[in-house]
Amino acid sequence: MDLNLVRTFMAVYQCQSYTKASELLALTQPAVSAAIKRLESEIGKQLFIKKGRGIEATSKAHALATKFQFALDTINDAVNDKNTLSVYCAEIILHSLVGLEQINFAESPRSQSMLFEHLREQKVDLVLDVATIKDSAFVIEDAYVEPLVVVCAKNHPRIQSELTKKDYYRESHVIYSALWQGMNGFEQIAQEPVEERNIALTVSSLSSVLMFVSQGDSLGLVSQSFAKRWEKQLNLAIYPCPVKLDNAKYKFIYHKRYINDPQHRKVRQQIIDKLSKKKPFMEWMGL
Image 1: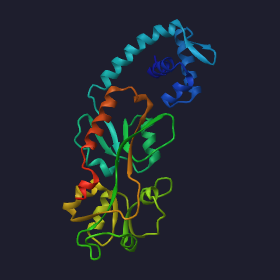
Image 2: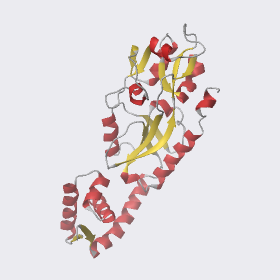
Image 3: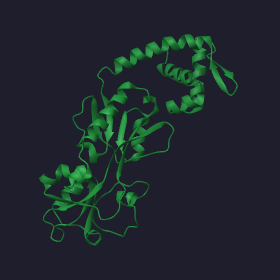
């Protein structure tokens, strides 16, 4: 018997709805209905009957559900025996999380469409990033918030003790190339009208932002913890951004299939506990 038929049956049985099961499985409703009909054909019994606007499991369905659940639990226990989850994480906070047990971290792909495609295909179990989506198949939860700061070389010829808004717009900038809804990160989170910046260089990673500003006279914009992580090694100066910005808001994104998964919940809590130990902004800046 096709294991996918069993999984589809259990989703319909638990949801008591073809529509909800299709959302849970990220399948179309006709595909779910066809799978149930195929299973009914194989066993020669009807599994669900219409009741009002919904459906109701037959006695045969109840009997199968008990046996199928035991079989699926056995399979899942075997597959998850190593208790390791695959997690995509934004580069800018990845440095804070490497080393946590039961997690294989990888940097999030720059393409948001690829990120969500990998979630659907179960190539990754969890995402921690600023990306978001309106899709009922996914759960999106707040995970961590931190402000962005401006970085430059400590020996910058014009910026030494403070950074004003006039300074910020006068200087050149190294920016990260990723776009969200057609805007770069600065435009996306600005809380006031912004002026056009002088872009000296556009790079494909936030690590490159730090590397290039440390070797020149340009400014960069990164998260506070990322800046502090490399401050001494790269001889960086760090300043609060003089332009009013929203905080960087990192989200957990995962498929609904993991809502009640205890291992998945444990891993999310591990990440939150680790991030909650990071120093607050005022302490970082020595204020």
